[in-house]
Length: 287
Image (tube, rainbow, N blue to C red; front, side, top):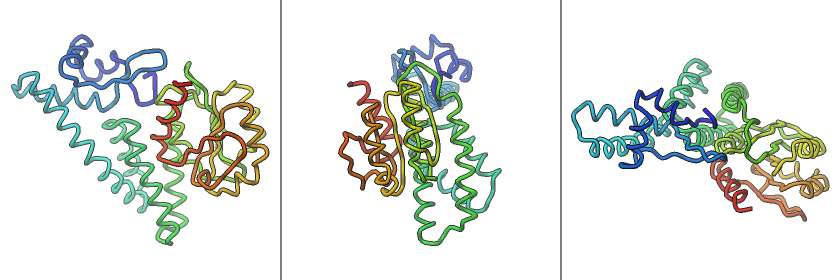
């Protein structure tokens, strides 16, 4: 693996038992595979591609012609991708609500084997976190449940983040604003950036803006992302944030960003972490 959640064709071949030559033929003739490109131009394949290859093998063994097998494999994968994330999110919520660590980890492992990192984040983890926050505000989730769920998911996200500072892509420094303790959305955003070739320097919760500036200088970062749920965290650091914006491109993330105005040219990242990672990557490519 060279990117988070992505496989080179040799690894895809090893896992599926299909030769690289045949995989390329299936991709070229039937559009079975949907690779992305690394920053170095390598073709990278997702767990979804692996699932389609395995489905095609099953259909071929049932006696279908290759074109029929490819069409059916793609159609089956689309149905599975549409149904699985919603059901998985509900199962995850139930496991975490019941403090069932084993079930939550097993479900997470199963999803990693079946869906892409983007799907896991966009359709399971982030929606669950939003629902947990809403339940917390309504008094339907206890402190114990919120802490248990946050701790488990933070551990799993940090596991996906292992090695995310390596590579040759653009560098991003990510940090929570001073006083901000909510970092799960920022972690998800960093993982989505990494899947698109970025190098991540993660400073975590409650980070002084001066420390963000130090990290930007040290690693010559292309962007800095500062996140906060409450806009007051940004307003208290407005002067330092404007200074930071003169060092590198500055993005504000989290719910607080939508209610924050600075004199500096700042990009607000207030939507889905995966969509925002894609947007930022396109901006970086276009200069």
